[in-house]
Structure formats: C-alpha cells, structure tokens
Length: 311
Image (cartoon, rainbow, N blue to C red; front, side):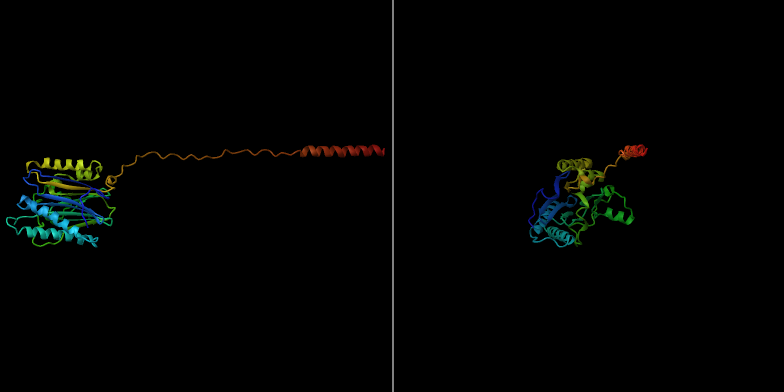
C-alpha cells in the first residue's frame, strides 16, 4: 500500500491544525489513500509534556511506514486497526526510554474507509464523530476518568465536554500494556461523513455545530472547518489547546439532513368524464309504408278492371 496525501477519491477530506494558546504544536495528523481505502489519523501529544510533539509525529510516521509495507488488503478491519495501534504503541514505548522522554505520550484516532465498510479505532480522548445517514451523530468512546464515571452512573445523556475529569486519561499510547483500540464500524451506506478531532476542537464545538460542519457543502468545507477550529480556540481563551481535525465527507453528507415536511395540500378531486346520455332515434321505415300503399292501389285497380270486364 503506497499511502498518498491527496484529496481525491470517493471521500473528500479537509484538514486544519492550529497551535492555540500553547507554545508548541503537539498534534499531528495525516490522510493516506490508495486503492485499498482511505486512512485518516489524528494524534495528540498528551498534556503538553516534553516529548508530546515527538510522540504524535512519530506515531504518524510509524503508521505510514506500516501502511507502505502492506502488500494486500486487510482481511479483517478491526485487526488491521489494532495492528496500526500496536505499531504506534511500540514506537511511543521505545521513545519513552530515551533521555528526557520518560513522559512522552500521545492519543490516537484512526478512521479506515473502504468500499466494504467504515471503521474507526481510538485510544485516549481524540474522537471520531460519525454522522449517520438518518441524521444521528455518534462518536468514539473516550478513555478518560470522566467516561468511566458516567458509565458507572448508568446515565446516557451526559455531555463530557463539561465534566471536571474529562482530560484525565485512563489509556494512551504510553500505557504499559496495549489492549487494542476502541472500535466501531458501519456499513458503507450508513454514514454521510466523519470528523476526526483532537479535544482542542470537540470540547468547544457542540454536537449541532459538528453536524452542520459535516453537512456543509464540499466547496466550502475547508473554509468552514478552519472557522470551526478558530471558533473553538477563541471559546477556550488563553488556555486554548492545540486544535486539529480532519473533516471527511461522502456524497450523502448534504442528503443526511431530515427531509422537509410536505405541506398539507388538499387532494384534488378527480375529474371523471361521463358521456352524456343519448336518446335513441325513432326507427325508420326505409320506404315500407309507400310500398304497401302502391301494392294496395294496384290490387284495387285490378279488381276494378275485372269487375268492368264481367259487366
């Protein structure tokens, strides 16, 4: 598989990455395409620690190398994504053994799109948002203390954007043991588009704005994504995090909006054409009466002549 950073194919992509209020850009991202599918990646160096930039950038490079060595299409998408995560995890663990890199770490979100299915895997709090063709928005599970707390509470309607423990990770690429990625998949016709985003964007971008962003026209997608990222940085203020995202749109993106209800218009009364009744014409005698009169007249004349002869 020869990965290429392009913007062609069945899925159009737009990318943005802002430094925010940080001194260093520790987010990294990439889009790779081939005839086997499209792979979109966002990695976020954890916590502004030393080595965060090296961890995220090295993660992208390690995955790119793995993709370049791929000789045939993956047999099973989940195993393929887990393999990419394993490669990234091995890189970060090795990086941490270097001088001054003991705190190096990164999150990872990978979106894999093929003609047979739409798949994504994550570790940490970098998210993949999926807009379904029925208009519903879903996203990957966070590896955070906040996510665990909400799951233990049994609540399903909690927005983690405001949870006090939303940034406390339970897993990352620096974890001692690699247990695979949080995985989800959809059929090719189930999703209209995706947003792969670091927490610098999604924490300050409500769900409805993400839906509108995915549905935006592909002609203005790059501009709208840049606007969304800058708005997120502005909302975060002086403590704005690095903000990175990849917007992925399919042909069904704009059509995923709920159809407008039709007005209750009166049903037109059908016009039935009924032929007017016709009065049957009186029968004609075709000269029958005249013929009878002449025959009677002839018989009368003959009778008169016979009478005169006998006299």
